Length: 161
Image (cartoon, rainbow, N blue to C red; front, side):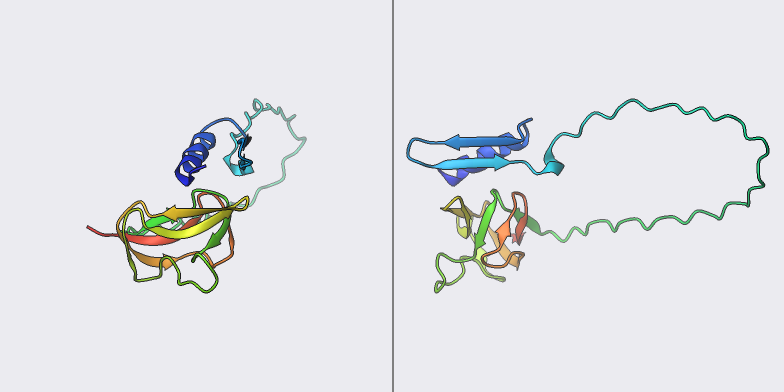
């Protein structure tokens, strides 16, 4: 199965109600997709329960409340013009085609659309992951041989042109 077909299948399944999807082809290729719990649709909350309290015999005096401290707002993301390049599949990340080979893409390197950036091994299948844009590699976010999740940022790229 072509890596682009796998990406399309993952995208389709991620927007569906499936929690698990399995595919087996006649040539022995097997694919199993499992959504993480956070990606599953949230269960419908039960209706709120109304509580009625009986009046107390005598209320104790209440101290004045301390002023509320505002929670620190999360910092707004900085628009640095960089693009996150995410993993299209779950698997093991490899920067090069072999242990003695140079990396497909290094920091500072200019890459072209369609150029292989890395390999993600999934179910003993080596999937070459290609760039979708012309860009400069600004950051490699994953170590060689590290497991990656679907949607995990692999590279930070600066688009060219």
